[in-house]
Image (tube, rainbow, N blue to C red; front, side, top):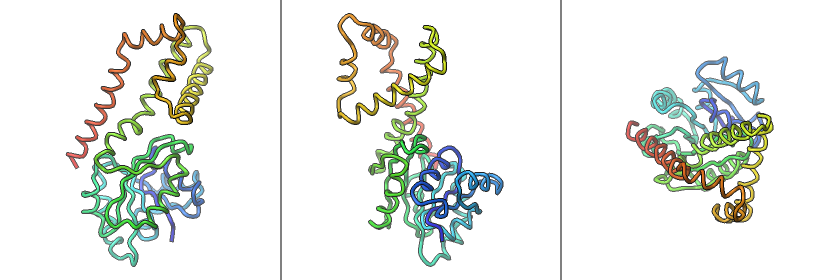
Length: 268
C-alpha cells in the first residue's frame, strides 16, 4: 500500500509529486501518466514507483488527480470498479480546474474528496496550496494531507466559492510575475545590463520584496512609498507605470482569469 498516488504528472502534477516525495520519501509514492514510458521516466526522476491508473486506485491512500477537466470523467469511470472493491476508501485529491466538489463527489464512488489549487513554485517548496475539503474527509485525513502539502509551501483552507478568485491571483500570478520580470529585465538590457544579470537581479528583487512584505505585514503601498524619494528616480518610474495603466491591466488580467475559471466550471 502506498500513501500517495499521482494520476497525471505534467507541470503541476509533477510539482506536487516532488513535494510529496520530500514529505514522505519516494517509497510512499506511485505515479501514472498517459503512457507507461512517461510514468516510468517521471518515477525515475522522482525516485518513486510507476504504475497504471488502476494500480494507483487500488494501492494508494491519497489519490491526486492532475488531469485535464475534459478527461476527468473518463479517468474516474475507469477507476470506479477498482474504487468500489477497496476495503477502505481512498481520498481523492483533485487539482482539476473548474470541477466542483459536488461534481467530484458524484463520480467518487464513496471516496472522500478534496479540491486543491497549487501553484508552480510548489516544486521548490515555496508555493501556495489552497484547498477545500468535501464531505466525508476526517480530521485525521485532513491533518495528514495538509502536513504533506506543507512541504510544497504555505497551505491555506478556503470555502469553495473563493477558490476560483484565489486561483486567479495565486495560480495565475506566477505567469503575470514572470511577464513583469521579463519586461523589467528587457529594460535593464536596454540600459546596458547583461541579460543574465538582469534576470537574476530582477528575480532576487521579487523574492526579497515578497519576503519583506510577508515578514513585516506592511501594505504594499507603504513599501512602495518607502522607495520613492521626493524628486527621485523611482517616483519617475512609478509615474510612467501609472500613465500606462499598470494597475488596471493587472486587475483586468485577474478578472479575465477568474471569468475563465467560471466558464470552465459551467462546462463541466
